[in-house]
Length: 222
Image (cartoon, rainbow, N blue to C red; front, side):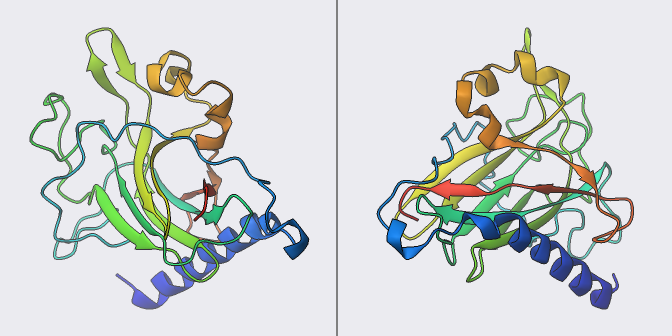
């Protein structure tokens, strides 16, 4: 890996997160106003990694000590964690976990054994927000998988976000996915669905061939 290029890529992506969320900060005269709706909660699901991978860094497309790269469409996810007043939540702990591009979790209880594991996909990561509430992950778009014989889960990513006062467990979805319309958990969010949707677009300035998505998370008190 070219460490120099990695640092440039990460700096550019975090800069985009700042630009995307900069307008959310409110003035001091509104300090007690509830100006931002909080991000909705969802279940953690059955595949939270009880046994953590040895590599937990922000880049899920590589596993430390292995030479390969994860299969699938690479994308960068950037954004900010804010409180309901629009102020950044500093040093918030963000855990994320997901299926690989084939729709398979690296979890002993995942019954989707017809889908292959990817030895080069990390599958889980931990990141802390900076002083501006910014975060950045690099991963691959997860695949859909059968939840029951009659229900296929739409592509999604799980998050456990812990601020100073609040903890939020939620899931992130992708715009334009046909399975969104039939996903029971996504549809149950009702009018809050838009707050957990991310649109991916080409990001040649961050990394050629990759996509970029921006998602801001709102905790109540931070």
